[in-house]
Length: 165
Length: 165
Image (cartoon, each protein chain N blue to C red):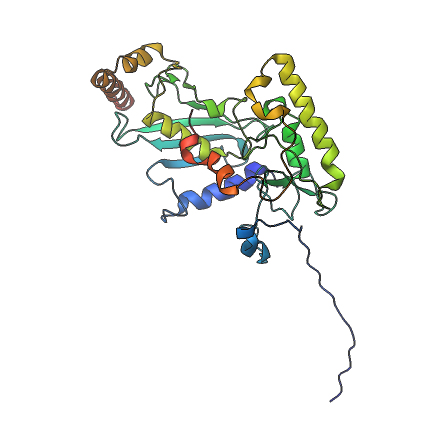
């Protein structure tokens, strides 16, 4: 039998490659094409692979960044948050100081601006005399290793018993 | 798509469901919707009074303003005027004192459902250390549970009476 190929249509799919923390591997490997089952940015609630509300095209123009605390956001979303003084330079999920993990291709281009904005927040707080509330601030960034922070621990901050004062 | 538009879709789906896993707010939030469907900056909610509190069997009307800077800044949430008597609410204006709704404690990962749920929890667990209604705060501080219950019940019975006459 002879097969003659007249035309080839290639279809590509892409996704941000996020280093997985052991137990998350299964869900990360599963390919979801439905916005509702996909991992979403906690700030804008749009898919990691989609864009933040102010962008039109996903990909390099609206990158994803990965925190030392393993919380991921669209670069634009988390930067907008850290740019507000009330953020105090903290991760919106776990309220630890937000910094990008080092040594990841997807973070590399953005590390410096996050170091700068978080130090600006810190200086503001020192000026206002409230910096001592944040013990963590003067410590060197805790090791950028995958097991630096136990995920099950950091997520409890959002448990319902912590909602009220 | 903006964050509030995404939330609206989730809220419709969540509150319409009878499945307690999809809708953990059954018996807590009766409704949460924009006042005018074409304007997602003004919302209203109805919550049920928590059981085993003097608010049981009554419903409460909440008004929500979503600023254009949302979710970087919190929504503004008030009860309807003269709708409730509670140590953390200024009854005449409906103003609510709740830490997670203050800009310095807010985080953009919370959404309108979380906020309304937190207001409901405040009915169950009044915080007399930071009262907006000092008299009600004092009654709780004196640990006079029956006086607190009696005053609230009287207020609510009067509220119903004035509504239907």
